[in-house]
Image (cartoon, rainbow, N blue to C red; front, side, top):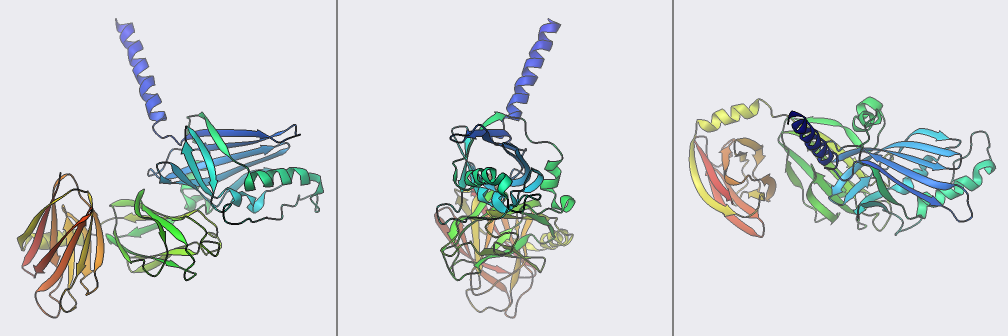
Length: 423
């Protein structure tokens, strides 16, 4: 009986391990092989993908072989949606012999698309225009004649051939490349992931702009995998965003969805964090023709938030409304419906300060928030009284296709509170 129990426990452990190993469909080794007409050797492409970091960043390695050529490269893949991974522009060579491919690996920019247990490369630029890259001279052969045939075959493969890979192993990439790819401060190699930015503020101001005014550049922005906007054309109608940071790590992935009317895509994302300015710019040399750029922002609430909570508890809280909502993601629009007089407020959702020192202006400004199931408490506290007491604001709550507009009136003794019920 004891032996049977041990066997059963072993089988259950193996089953559980198998479930964990296959929990992420991308991680593992993928491979394809293609023999060219009239050729003895085949071009073999192997892609090893590691387990995702923060659910979004996938360290990966490419091994490319053809005849006597072998190339091994580190790269970063980033989740765009459930069926796509963005392919990083940078491919750092660990090994290339007997010649180097140089920038020809740019041809593999775009996405990996998952379908029927296979992944296919969808190049971002092939449907728009062609770039015929030169170069790649063999170090001991300036004319390149010795490897000309091999180079042409690989260039054609990378540039235009259909690439579809099948999974041959579920074991994720787990060697030293993983840490180098995920931590650029260690390797000093840029693969699309920028160094970490620390933020004490809970809100980040963001603005999408275009270096070219305007050529139909289309971009997508994700925060920890959640779309803030998707496939939006950059134009003068884009609004400035006030984005609430999650406590801890926040990965903002900025995708170039196309090349626009005048290639390349020249969109950029302006960010203001703790009164410092940052840009994710597809026009810079290291990002031109890139599929994505990633900002890594770590939010650690400051001690000031504890002080705000103490101040709020010392004031009377007046209920304003109780609202039934049908979606967890809501948008708050705040403005001064009368005279803009310097009012600013702080907002607390379920005990967490989602905005502090937020200015109330005549033009509506937005704050995104995510609700929990059941009852949610949204507290509004005045930071000052402005030039004309009390501190007043108009608030519009957008939830799904519905809206609710309310009037707020707070002072240095009184808070306003709204209950939001998510069933």
